[in-house]
Length: 176
Image (cartoon, rainbow, N blue to C red):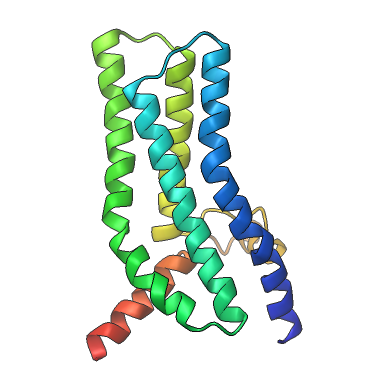
């Protein structure tokens, strides 16, 4: 492997694991904070936690498949791309359900900011950002020096890595 691939592989080795761990840890930590404050589980919190976890799992699966491809298992990405592409609509739907549940909860129960509502808004926001970061444009630039330099030098955002791979997969599928 060339040196640059080794660096990317090293980064992806921990990155996909971090995404997978966060899929469990973030909702659990949010719930612990809500419970510690005396809050109760709400539908908005549940929907937001599910959306957040779902999108983080999507990211973990994608980056694991990219790493496996770099390690010589070319079929890993071939296996996961069609599934990740099919997961785009359900991913967006989960984010919209979470946002709708939050809005409905505020409308029906009043405008107070409870711990569960704050957690729900935070988790739904993270889910929406993860959706954009994987399926649309790369938002995350802080974990890679080259990406961060690109952002601060004014070259802006680019299409998300997974979005580019899905587009290439779809184009190849149309050609066959």
